[in-house]
Length: 365
Image (cartoon, rainbow, N blue to C red):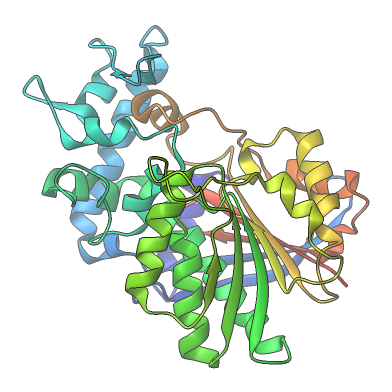
């Protein structure tokens, strides 16, 4: 089923919208792929800030669809990119990109944000509407940027995977003995999903999380520390080694490869929500094998991947200019799981109706 067909099929569902962050399960079933491999699939509807103005949401969807067609018709249009001097370069002929980054020939706040695309912190304002963008010069999102991050498919998709992730961790907390969960987060970035998960787990279960975060971007870790401090959580966040030189960023950053030193069967969950889709298949296989053994029995590894069938993929790559990632489908993901010698029956795919990402949960029996 294509995204458009799926989108049309859900119009007749009983639930058109839900409260922001709430998840309504539309379907949950066992399925098989073309090779007969069994796995579970969930289809869910997730309440999003964009639902508050369905007319504007549809207008943005149609506008992006129009630019998608123009991008297909004009393969010569160059995607925005970061130059060697850290300048965002936008092709003036690329009408889709110019609409995002310029207005009346002047650079917009989106242009300032675009300079962060190679950094982990770039996703934070799309995930953290209303509070995001504190790293920008103004310290907040202007109305034009806020609207785009609210209604663009990528913003909706990022928030959907964040809410799915939080929901999965709440369920894991309910099943975990004791009052503390030990979780490793790989490629954690600004940690917006980790903070949301902590808030929900503390509120709904009374438990707390010991987080160990792995990210190479010291500035993203510093931003994450500030946000976790403001959130006033009882959960603990380990941001990694610190610099002794006061002229450098406080945190050094650490590679996800260092997580190999975690004890086997010591973790209540492992996530790689934003990292997985950048790993080539063989690297993803080795990564999965490395971290799967760190899980306690019954614990999940949670990853996400942008879908090949997502709406407006050209707009993402050649209008926004998002750095190249590896879009996949369920079969591609099952290939990696099988190559890691893990039974695909331990896999559950969760799809939101926005169709941008799939969240894959791989449980250890």
